[in-house]
Image 1 (spheres, rainbow, N blue to C red):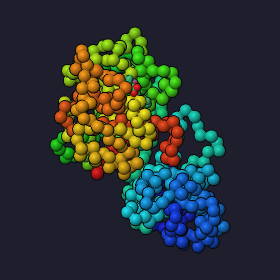
Image 2 (image 1 turned 30 degrees about the horizontal axis):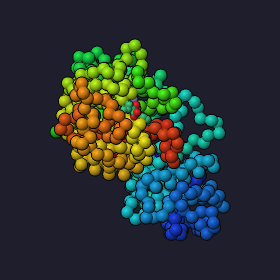
Image 3 (image 1 turned 90 degrees about the vertical axis):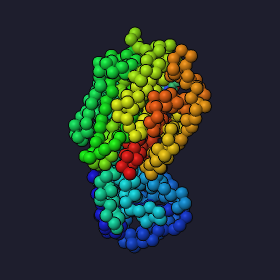
Image 4 (image 1 turned 180 degrees about the vertical axis):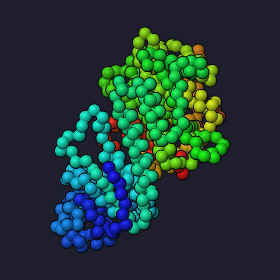
Amino acid sequence: MKVSTTNAPAAEIQAEALILTIPEGTGKPTSWDAVDAVVGGIVSEALAGPGFQGKRGQTLALSTPGNHCRELVLVGLGIPEEFDLEVWRRAVANGIAKARQRGSSKIAVPLPEIDGHDSEELSIAATEAAILTSYRYREFKAAPPEFVELKEILLAAPVNIAAATMRAQKVADATCWARDLVNTPSNMKRPDSLAENAREMAVETGLEFEIIDSGKAQQLGLNALLAVGQGSSVGPRLVILEHRPMGATGQPTVIVGKGITFDTGGISLKPAQKMGDMKADMSGAAAVFGTMQALANLDAQRWVVGVTPLAENMPGSQAYRPSDIIRAYDGTTIEVLNTDAEGRVVLADALAYACKRYEPCRIVDLATLTGACVVALGSHAAGLMGNNDELCNALISSGNATGERLWRLPAWSAYDKLVDSEVANVRNSAGRAAGVVTAGMFLKRFVGNTSWAHLDIAGTAFLEKATPYQPRGGTGFGVRLLTHWLST
Ligand code: BES
Ligand code: MN
Ligand code: ZN
């Protein structure tokens, strides 16, 4: 799909369909007067009728009498007081869906004038919406013959939005690649081949790449990562990607992503129902890979290292077991109470190793870590924990800007003793109470004094039900959020 831009006024745009966004309760915006005149007043007529009030999620297609555009699609923005960029993204996606259902493959979106939001912001969000809503996982099944491929989106604004749009495309493309990785079935993304996918991306984009295989991990003492991976016929890997712009000094930022290529639960086996969704248990790693790709393609001016522990959590004669005690990379001893709490175990080594090796100014991890987070927040926000308010607030504000929202949970010391073990320094499972928080408290034990934040993306990384710009399956959650945070 091509995204192009123009300065042409709405009334002069040539496309098959033209999307006009309409707020609720304010009447027809004057910006659309000229279009309305060209098409013989059908917009005013529609707004005067009972069928369309500009409510959020509402769409109405109108065939035009002339040759301007084949049709107009009116899309509701809801009441102005509740407008934000996420409302706009969803509106654009809904408009595109409607136009495509009616056979259009070249669709134009004139940007509305909205107080408090400039054309650049709106063009970025519209580009994201267009690319992300068009995404389908098509690796193993072709599109049905009647499927209308979206060929071109044309964004129109009086000011120059070409550069912003170009940048947004790169970020959205990286998000789609992350989605592909998440949607890939687990027989085709064992730790070795997922590491290979990352290597290919690194070669294409010019990122530094390093892979720590099982042998090297043994030498280094990454015993927690090794323990989780030991039940699988393919050993674990630690993949490291680095983006270091010329002249970067000081300390890098490290981002860490949980990369369990399939989570059966191990010996503490999961129930069969929906176990297949656990192919998405590497979504944290996918977000890190996608973010690194975007940073490289954007030529970002920040020094960033991506660290991803990859392993497959399988039961079997070699598997780690409940009651095992593991000496992690930093010497902390971990009592395994439940082999299904494997994410925190692999992250323990990844975090400690990254802190020791890179002495980062800050470290952020992303993980599909707990079912408890899904229970608490569902799919509309990821859980956030951290030991530094400034870092947490910066992430929250990038979350609000990108629609990948975060909700902070406490990391108070009162929770800390819940992860104490009787026989080791920590235990990997602390029972039902505050399950999302205790998982984070476990991770906190491995970052020392480093500024740290943890995103539990269990509810946001993989969707059972589509949203306007997220089809079912992998969302690529975290790529837009982290890229926004790391490039401002
Ligand atoms: N990968 C799962 C968490 C998960 C659950 C992600 C649902 C996405 C959707 C994680 O490894 C896990 O199994 N966590 C356990 C921890 C428990 C045993 C302490 C959980 O949440 O049940
Ligand atoms: Mn698990
Ligand atoms: Zn898991």
